[in-house]
Length: 588
Image (cartoon, rainbow, N blue to C red):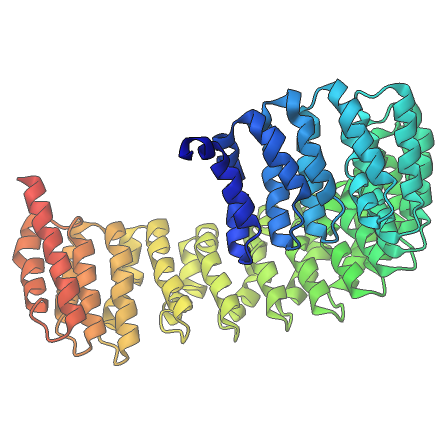
């Protein structure tokens, strides 16, 4: 009897688990569907498992979402593409549930399956499913249908294609805004599958209807359709049909629609071509840059560099720069921040003279902005300006402001300056660096914020790499060694950190003569944190110095630390000693 029941076991267990009150158990069983299908075999999966899933009336969205995802990769388990149509039934019922994420996943899985199905199965099974959903009483079914037309349309007869276009047109005029939104969102995908002869007639009629929708949520999705359709239409059709819509949308009464235009502007410009961009879209863009809604100005300001790339410098200076000057003192800090994140990219577009004349004053005002994010965004892109105007002018005009920011009250701004210093150093050269920035580098080592001190130590290492060990010996090493005697233990610890980072750059000789005596002396510090950092530092010096130095100096110091009263100091000292022993064994 046990032998007879054996093949039924997986499906019986699945049924039990899917009826269990515990949601986690139900979820786990759905995620194991592929394992159960393998156990059942292809035929029983088609005849027993799939019908059971079609009838499964679980009301938990998480379980349904997992089922929709699993079924999308189920073709191999039902016997390949010849039998793919059996998967449509459970997914069709998932397309009608109320939860959006479940419907979207079901549509996604249907699209995957439909893309693999044979043309005859598409016509016999997939197209009728799309038609049923499109004519569904419940809005959820009609919403789901919108995302399936582009898969169903390919490979159909002319009669069926006409029916599908007619059905989509009805969805574009549906009573429910949610359905019209879905139709607007998927129109671009559907349009890519439709023949060009119907594109400029039927598809454009649907598009124009959506652009005049009373709901702004529908119109803003139609904005995305502008770029998608513009790439499919002939250039003259695009200018005649798409361009007026973009211009109207840029003046739409809803700020959300105007925001969408500002956000998509670069793609829209690509769709209509350079000539129309210069004549028609520049005035539209200027309006968006001066919009009375801050959100629209933020989106428009963030695209200023990309938009200027499409124009010649004269047009950018004439039309866009006046708006940029206004935005640099905008009442919204988020607008100024969006502008600061891209404005440096305008320097290569405008060229040296125009950058000096028009952009430098704007950079300076943004560098002194009261909002730290604005200052940060400018600092992080300074190299783009340097490439255009050269280091002399940069140092005269912007460097005083940078030095001021090095002592900014917001630590993130100070951190951004530190990270920029090695680049500045390489561009300014040794002389200028020593003059202006050298003292600051040591000042940051004693900052109140740990992240600043850590970045400052890394900075010293990068400067030593940039200017060489001879320069570092003269300008950095004496001050670092002096810090080891600082009364504040955190500052002594940072000195040790700087030594550990600089030692590999400075080489064995300087490490042995300058760093090692100081480190050994620090092992006698009264603070345990200093002592176990000495142990870690000595371990990092082992590969740098000669074996004789390890045996003579480092080992003895670590042995002393391994007998320290503090447990952490003993732990790190013993770890370092084990490292020495392991190295000795490897050498022998």
